Length: 245
Image 1 (cartoon, rainbow, N blue to C red):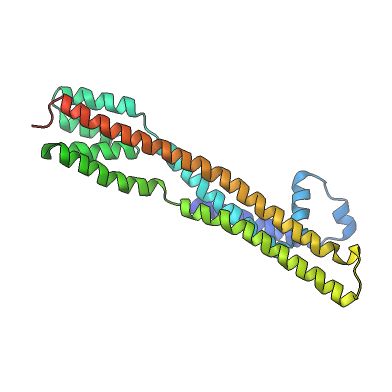
Image 2 (image 1 turned 120 degrees about the vertical axis):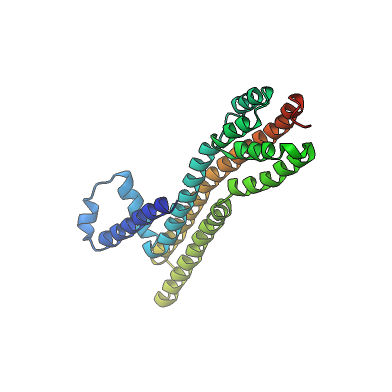
């Protein structure tokens, strides 16, 4: 996670440095530059005020870092519960509770960890097994949702920064009107352009992160549902194989 954030922050610094270099270019050189999508994006980034737009870009990069980390973690945490329960059932049929526990220990994911806790308390009866599953399930639930609060924070902050840029741009436009003493499109065009660009970048950032956030939440819900189904099935398997004495 720290490596991903560090790499993305380096990318942000490179983007900001590139923006400064472009500001120092002659107008003719800027006009002659490659009119690719990246160059257009940089142009709009600079036109919106690169000092302020960098904050929106940092929100996007940090938000994406947390999203990537969560997606990778949740994909690793996904377990084939049917296969896991089948292996546990085979070991319990032969009375090998320790073997079933080893199967859970060697399997990645929160579902296997919860089933391991249930098997570990098998000697204390079904009530103890259910209590252990519920208690440890709450811990695993918190681990699955780790980092989501930061993603939601960046989703909220990005459009706010955009709207703040809008207000700053409009203030600049009205200051120009006051200094010139007349109202004309040429006077207020730059301020309004800054205002609109910051709003657009803020909203685009929020939209991108919101899509990832909804995917992550749906992934967490899917894993939690599998955890609950596997926990119920484990108790039934243990009862069927007379594990509870």
